[in-house]
Image 1 (cartoon, rainbow, N blue to C red):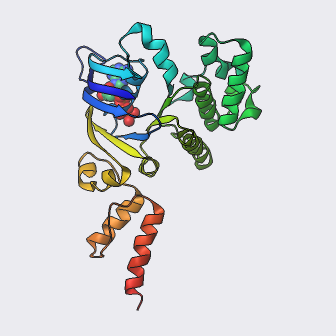
Image 2: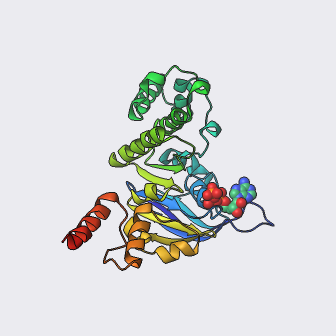
Length: 277
Ligand code: ATP
């Protein structure tokens, strides 16, 4: 379990607070989407999960260890892997294999174990054939997968990803999202920052932040059922939810807390059958 208790943080002593009293519990194995307007504190929050940032006040505990305790920080970083928004910021090796080996090398594991973990991590993200390639020659999507493999080689229990599909084409996006789904099904806890509401709708839980605070927390259905509260802070809804709201506003008896295509089709089919004759 990751527990944040009343966490405050500011980057600059004279500046505004990026986090203003965030309390949150994240369970192992959960797939959580973190959404909210630009600058609301999403990246700042996930950087607190593995002690990259430490709270100015309040407390973050990961697996029972306080992130403020320097003797626990290495263990915490093994428990919570971080995939940054720009994979170039994460690259440390020349070849894919070297890069993915960096984490296990830092754990001072024997060479045989490091090789085993690198091979396993590359297979888990579906790119074993890239092992000896120079990272500079890879596509954006491939670099993102290398970054995820690098994190997996440490065998974390949670992975926090900052907009993992940003700037990727639809094929690469699908590949990355499928890997995230697979990791979740293998029991890895996923904390996933996104601006894409359809992506958020596929998770189990959505935490909406606004101005450094948790604004809403619930299942996708609960969150997108609160359209007014989301629109108030400038957030969009999944297109499918917007369509159903427009139908309802036009007088059709449909539910508007629908977030996926199958449920929406069901609503529309049942509506169509009423008007068939
Ligand atoms: P986005 O969706 O645009 O990525 P975000 O929700 O991730 O934004 P953060 O990046 O956590 O938000 O930023 C929260 C606040 O902290 C913003 O006001 C931002 O300008 C400020 N901030 C972020 N990083 C720094 C930094 N390195 N130095 C100073 N201020 C920063």
